[in-house]
Structure formats: C-alpha cells, structure tokens
Image: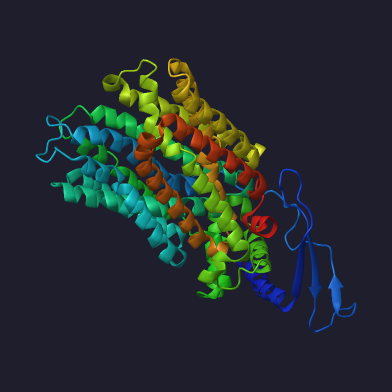
Amino acid sequence: MGFDSEKQSISSVGQVSNFSTFEIGVSFVSVNLDHSFWIWDSEFTNPAGDSSSGGIISVKEPLIKEKHCPENYSVLAAIPPFLFPALGALLFGYEIGATSCATISIKSPTLSGVSWYNLSSVDVGIFTSGSLYGALLGSIVAFTVADNIGRRKELILAAFLYLVGAIVTAIAPVFSVLIIGRVIYGIGIGLTMHAAPMYIAETAPSQIRGRMISLKEFSTVLGMVGGYGIGSFWVTVISGWRYMYATIVPLPVIMGIGMCCLPASPRWLLLRSLQGKGNVENLQQAAIRSLRRLRGSVVADSAAEQVNEILVELSSVGEDKEATLGELFQGKCLKALTIAGGLVLFQQITGQPSVLYYAASILQTAGFSAATDATRISILLGLLKLVMTGVAVIVIDRLGRRPLLLGGVSGMVISLFLLGSYYILYNTVPAVAVVALLLYVGCYQISFGPIGWLMISEIFPLKLRGRGISIAVLVNFGTNALVTFAFSPLKELLGAGVLFCGFGVICVLSLFFIYFIVPETKGLTLEEIEAKCL
C-alpha cells in the first residue's frame, strides 16, 4: 500500500466521529461461567431520521467484533519493545536483592569503609525503605505528567533517574547523601513500574500480551536473584556496598538508549489524535510508522488498516473525549479502578512482604545457620520465584488469567494456614514450615506476582490508563510499606501463628474478589477489554 492510499485510508477515519451523532443503547447480555464477556446488543438511533428504513435502525452487531483475527507480527520486531522496558523492572529487582546485602556491608565496622557505620535501627530502616518512598513519589509524579509526555519518554526519564540514583548511592560521602541517592533511584522505580507495563501492553500483539507483561515480572525476579548473587560477591569486600550499586550503572544507560530508539506507543499517539492534542494527520501517520516498527515487515501493507480499526474502536467506546479527573471514579473507570486496586491491594495484604521477611528464620528452624546461609537462602527463594514465574509466562496466554489467579491464590490459602498452624501447633516439625513457605512462594509467583501487574496494565480505558495505573502503583507501594512497617509490632502483639492465619483469612476474601469481580482478558485486544469487560 503506497503513501497515497494510506493517506486516503487515514482520511476516512474522519468519519469515525460520526459515531457521536448516534444515540447508542448498549445492554449487557451474558457472562459465561469463567466470567468471559461476550455479547453486546446495540440500538442505533439516527436523529436526522434519514435512514432507508425510517428513523431507527436496530442491529444485533457489536461495535467491537466478538472475535478478532490474530494480529500479525514478527517475533524479532516484538522483542525490543519488551526488552528495554523490562530492563527497568530488572533494575527494580536488583535493588531489592542488592540492598539486603548492602545493609550487612554498610553496618560492618571492618567492611563498611566509612566512619558512620554505627547506624541506628531507624537509620537502617530509612536506608532500606528509601527507594520505596522514592517509588511512592514517582507514582505521584506519574499521575500528574505521564499522559502528557507518553510512556516512552517516561521510561527514558526513569532510566536517567536510575543512573543518577545508582551513582549518587555508590559515591555517597555521608549518610544523608546516601539516602538522597536511594530516593532518586526509587523515583525511577515508581516511573518504571507505571510506564513499563503500559508500554508493553500497548505495543505487544494481543495473543502474546499476557506472556510479555508476565516476562516483566520475570525480569524483576531475575534482577532480585542477580542482586543477591552480586551482593554476596561484594559483601566481604571493604566498601562492598558501593560496588553493589556501581555494578549496575551500565544497565540504565542501555535502557535509556534503547528507549530512545523505540517508537512511541501507537495507541498513545492515536489518543492524542482523537483528542485533538496536535496535528491529527501527523499523529496518525506517526502511529502507522510506529506500528510497522513494532510488528515488523509482516504488517507493512496493513498498518494503516490496523490503525483505522483501532481508531474506530477507540471512538466507539468514547476515547475521543478528553477525560476529567472525576471520570476516574465513575462508570467503567471506577470498575477498572476497583479491579486493579483490589488486585494490588490483595497482592500485598495477603502477606507477601511478611512471608519473605520471615523466610530466613523459618528456614533456620529447619537447620540452616543464620550467619553462613542467610544470603544462600535468599538466592534459593529467588530461584524458586524465577522458576515459578517462568511457568506462569509459559501458560498464561493458554490458560488465561482467572484460572491461574484462582488456583495460585488457593495454594496460598493452604500455605498460610499451614504456616500459622506450625507456629501454633507443630513447632517441633520444621518440615511443615519449610513446605508451607515454598508452597506460598511458588503459588504467589503464578498468581498475584505476574498477573497483578498484567491486569492493571490492560484493564483501564486508554484515556485514563496513565492516571489509573499510577493510582494502582501508589496503592501497591503504599500498602507494601504499611505491611512491612506493621509486621514486627503485629507479630509481637498477636504472635506469628495468629498473624499468618489472619493473612490466610484475607487470602480467602481475595478468592471471592477474584471469582466475582475480576474478568478474563485472555486473547482480547485492549479496545475489546474496554468494551466487553467494563
């Protein structure tokens, strides 16, 4: 298809706005047992009354096709749009692993290499949670600017903050500068965990979107294991904590350069076009070029047609009107916020930070020594998380989101009650605790771990996706901080057994939430998800 025919095809999209001249009545017809959403009945009323049949045209055709043809794409072309955003997730995971080792190094009078090694418990808490507070700040920044600068530029900014944060942390001469470096790095985390799933979701073909976003979680876990491994290598070296953070300096450079070479999200470009934020024709032509680069030569002739289809679908679900802040808490946006916010809330309050925090002491009861094996225990759990996340990546676009969530969370319920019963009844049988711990970690990594981030990236309508995901990320990091902070005092007040059983009860509640609220989005385009699931 030549440029002229493309231009003609794009110009025909101007007719998309004609949808707004019809009054569209939509009724939800049925939901099957696995909560897949199927049929829309639409009645079009032509106000002008100039139809061939009179004034009202009744149809049984959905605005969004019930079934769509699989999207053509090149595997090689699909890798870079995943790889460079996923580097940001890897840098997040690395920070978790490396910081656990850096805490040991920086407190050592012989290995810290600084005169201010004698840190109080409050200082240690500020050091370990500095990036978390930065991530909260990054989520707030994303809420205010992300939709204006776009996903690609947000990831470039995140790479820059990663780089600055790592350098400042590595060369920090005093404790206050160290914390500044941690917060800067954390802002990069907040921006990455906001923009990376969005960019991947909006650029990946629908038939592999779940796998791609789950691979982002795989990258986070891979970074965590790498952080533990590199941290254990440097932990016995003087000023080893500096080397832990300096080691990763090349990665944000690669991430930033890679994102500079990638195109902007075609859906973000089309949203700007529909809402009149720029030259309409230029934005639509940019979306065509972007789609060609993202899908490869197999769509060279059909890119304009695909852009037309996306524009029609976006217009049919009201994306041509600029969103207001109030819309986020109304209608379909409120439903999306309930689904996404509920998933990330349950992701944290079902005990994930606490179980991992308690993992070392659980395994010590099984015969592991605290001094020698602490880092090895962390690496062991990281490898288990890596393997189980890999399993989720393989099956998620085959089995769907709901079966993995329901099955994985059911396993978490069993493991949490087992863990609670160990501390209450069976504390002379450490094998119970070890089995429960491994079961919990494995089940979490095939359910809440990857699917929480996947669902929040695909469930929001496009015009509010940036703000919606920033709220979900804020809930995620905020709840993580709260659960981590509250765990120790609650353990002292209630005891570990009661606390883990309490997490088990919350996990049961999350099963009801998943079964009755969370839809199945396997194989649907983002526009179909908005039309059929909200």
